[in-house]
Image 1 (tube, helix red, strand yellow):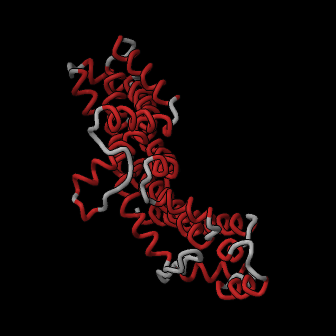
Image 2: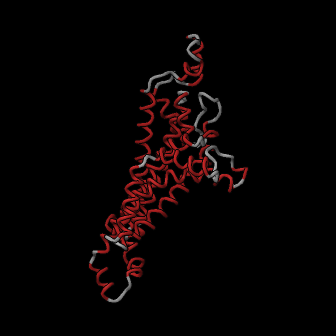
Image 3: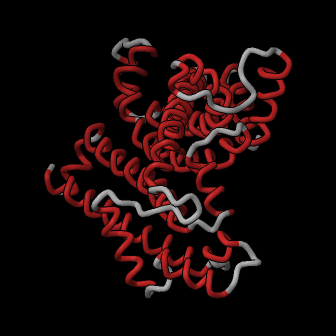
Length: 316
């Protein structure tokens, strides 16, 4: 188990290092001078040069990269160029919104996918299966930002059940915050859940065709007991793989959805930073999002070994 964990952990670290290099290089080649953006086009050359030196942007790129990475390792994300406050203050406030939104959306997505996928597989080629797969195909085809607008029109404008946007702050209570996050979470979860439901159905149907499943059925086990006792666990590896990719797509989707609902999460923070050419904020937020995706895939790899010990034994 230790060898299996060590290999996965080294892959996790190498991916993070590679991601940090790519992010830094991309931010370096983007056009625009942060000092000029902050001071405005009417600023004098002397003022721009002084601010550039103050921000440390006159140093060599390699030195700035290692300074950024070493600072992150010590918990220092630097100072925002535009707001002149520690980047961590901006990120911390955004994380308190984006992480609950992502968890809520992923939970809804998984529940939706497992319920639809298992029911469709258990009723293969019946009207319930065909109908649900048709709806799931429709869900895949709908862009989440367009679905978000429809949800706002129906639940916020017409029914007035939920707020159309904004975030009240956690000091207003969990229920008020939950109501503000439920529509964005639904907009994110519907598309991801529809994709995951089709994968779940296909994986369960594939396991249903295995000899040991037919043997269990021949011994008199009901379809339900066979499904929960033999099929579900063995069909989870493709589903877990898909969940890892879905979480990455979900995090990318928050950038758009948070702006549709005017939620001050990581998505809104990074877009504002891009507009302000606040590269230090963009680098930290994007690397944080990449780290969350890589960490999710790392956890999925470990869950593989829990679900199927053969993978762990093969790796060792």
